[in-house]
Length: 63
Image (cartoon, rainbow, N blue to C red; front, top):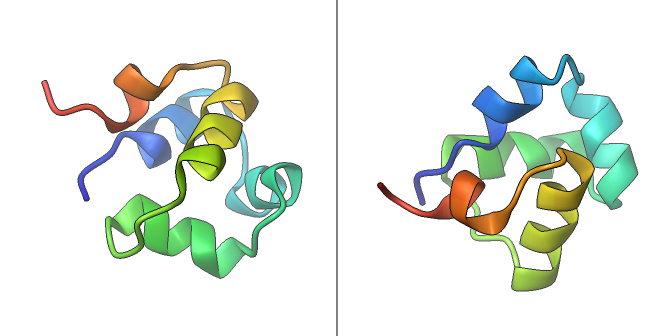
């Protein structure tokens, strides 16, 4: 699953461990999401988008 989570996280100057803690997952799970190797639930996608002050379309929709 391609996504822009890592790019958005870095542009917001947030470390992987801090974002993971904020959304209630492990850093390893966030790493897998950023690599496209883990499909997060819709609820988790929403939580990540909110934590990054973004939206689902920006983070997870192919353009």
